[in-house]
Image (cartoon, rainbow, N blue to C red; front, top):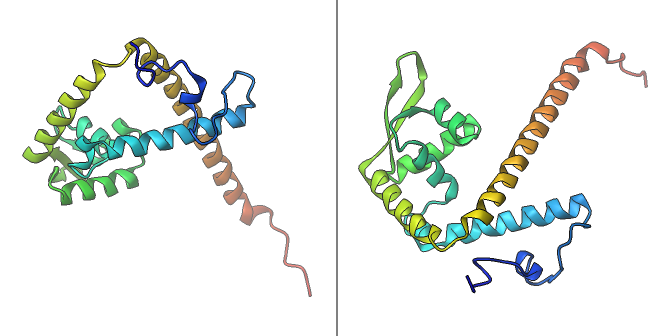
Length: 189
């Protein structure tokens, strides 16, 4: 592979082009995380701008939901679990994809009238197949070994972020439950 973009070894290719900063293992943790989040944000924008996604007016998150429905209908709660997204975010995406005729809200769940069962529409199935074919063709040009190592690192970060979210949520709940119990009487003016 002679194309440096497909097999990056040069530090400058891994960072924002205007900074041209060389990345090293000695960067402070916060700087590395900030650089990573910057790259992820730019990568997401680059993916969204790819013709295969822009032709369908969807992004990677929408595609991930379509992919989750490939094997059959799911409730919005199941879809949220599968995609590791909040139920609210899934409901918003389902509405967007339904409006674009990628999904069919098939029926209400018999056990819970509020829950919706979602499935791919014929248009959604065709789009998913076309995007998957295109991604398979692009994937043939990529070094699997390097990307698998990157995916492993990204999953570790995903777990770290999820743990941090749970800790913060638990701390917030504890603080809010103690507000009424330990508050002092209002000061006299």
